[in-house]
Image: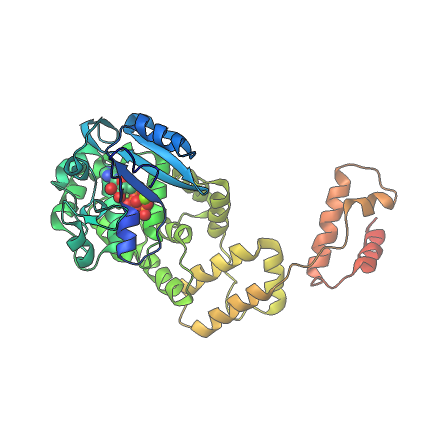
Amino acid sequence: MVALSTRGTTPRFVGGCVRDALLDRPVKDIDIATSDAPEIVLEKLAAAGLKSVPTGLKHGTVTAIANGQPFEVTTLRRDVETDGRHAEVAFTDDWLEDAGRRDLTFNAIYCDLDGTLYDPVDGLADLRAGAVRFVGDADDRIQEDVLRILRFFRFFAHYSSGDIDAAGLKACKDHAHQLPRLSAERISAEMLRLLSALDPVPTVQLMAEASVLSQILPGDQHINNLRQLVKIEVDAGSPDPLRRLFVLGQPDKPDAKTFAASFRLSNVQKIRVLALADRMDNLSPDLPDRDLRKLLYIRGVEAALDASYLNQAKAAKDRAGWTGLRQRIDRWRRPQFPLKGQDVLDLGLPAGPQVGELVKAMQAWWIAGEFNADRDACIAELKRLI
Ligand code: ATP
Ligand code: MG
């Protein structure tokens, strides 16, 4: 910020960092607006010995790296032409114009290095009131960029108190059919951020009523199941957006792959979704320890914890029981299978697919014996099998 405050320019913080600082919420990333053109920004950063990345020069964005932290520096701009997602921009030195191209009023509060606030579109009052409102005409703003529909609902889930803005909601409804134009990555990133709100259910309900949800979620929507899950997660202090997305869509095992693909989930996320769809119907507070240990060995801790929330959401109330089950899951330590392929070879068997099969059969025997057989017992059984 100091590096940019030379030659008579006064850059300002804007967006999430100002908004969240005003609410005493943790700040995620830092956005800075400046009247300098991007080339000047690059020059000033270089002069201060700071690293910079020309993230989106055409749109006026340069990422400055200071103390290992990225700062998005964007030149004041106005959108000249839009195609529903991408804007052609013109740089300006007019702060009001810059505010006019931002999405929501409380995302257009600026703050300079002295801590002075600039609030050209009355964002502060909306922020304090928990009112999520578009800057200017909602309909126009969504026509310019359909992503704003999802941002509107995301910010509603995280910042609102009270009713949703009627004009905003109507505009979202009117343009919901444009949502498939967004990339699946965008949609899933927005949805997951929305679902990480403490209680996203009222928002999701509104999205369904506005025909927004059906545009982004293939198949049926299970809002009641989501409601149950959210209650339990909040009570247990472990909300999880991906688990919530799964419950909302609730794909069966055969559909889980398509579901994961339709949201372009990462591999790690996909594995989790597939595990979620592969139900563990017997997982409940009264599952005996020995069955639980087997299940954990085969399915893993993460999948079992996920399943515990799904099953609890469907079960009759037994809060203490489910908490106890999760404590048992947390306490479990994976036992080490005492045999390796080499043990089979050491007994004189030739290398080949048979070796792997034998090890597998031995492991099944060891699991069935509740992990009690030690190495000697396993070798003895292996000899017997051979
Ligand atoms: P957070 O980073 O906490 O998610 P943010 O408000 O900082 O929230 P960013 O995506 O980092 O969100 O964007 C920074 C700012 O840029 C926003 O506050 C808003 O002023 C503006 N902005 C971002 N996306 C859009 C958009 N699609 N349309 C209009 N303005 C936008
Ligand atoms: Mg931000």
